[in-house]
Picture 1: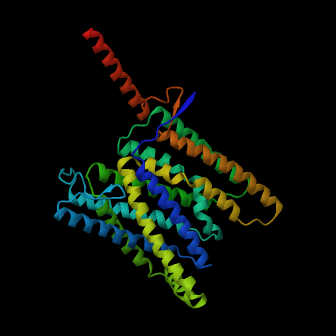
Picture 2: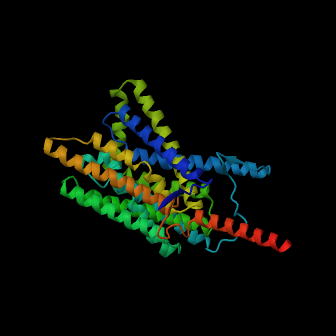
Length: 380
């Protein structure tokens, strides 16, 4: 058996997606450090949606001005013009709008379930906990895409999904036996992952079938979600969070408070760029590639979660260590299998290499060479 790397030149968007995701996470840690014990769950999400509206609108304004002067323009290698704007959409405007509303709904429900459905104190480490089961998104996405978008699942992808499923089951059983599992979190993760996949699939359909512009959908979805978030401030918990954030100004040194404000703005900007590149990843690749890109950081989150998790006694320490080691090993295996699914790595055994883009390219090359040899023989 041999393994070949199937990296493609067009991995710019997944790469930028991972980069902005990592930097955003770092900014979040800095923000939590600056504001100490104040939670900004609602404020962070609201900042994300507002940033999407602003940055998406700026891109659309740049496009409008460039279009008036007939100037082609790119930003970070991303074309600002829709190449399909003259193609006729098969769906009505009403259907497109409804689909965008559903996409916005799944986005905000996914965000809420990831952040707010648990009152457990360990919710502070929810991202690290979520990292253990994030690979389930590639399984859910594969199933939904095969039925809705008619995407075929080939042999190497079936193998990858089977191994990922086994690893997820091993993690779940291990954490149950080690008594570190939280069933409520598993339900939350399932809800969050399913919503994320539905969001990706709807947007993939809008990009491929209806040629919807990425920046327009960014502004539209951001506006809908901002309205949803604004309505939440009618309830006590979001109000308390906002008041605690405002009151923190009098409790901290001004320099730390304003550094926190700048970090919050940076978090929103990075989140907007992350979502733009997420949409480009979905458009040019698939929801499964987005799931892979986001899973790349999971081993680091798992390590961080283990370091930060509270330990009360030696017995609990041993249980958590065993669970941590098994989970970390499984996370690397799932990440490797996700790379196989997305043909980053190509296995040359049991016919797994067939139907991969690398195999097809090499086969076409060989066929071309054979044709040249045959033609040269005829000339002689």
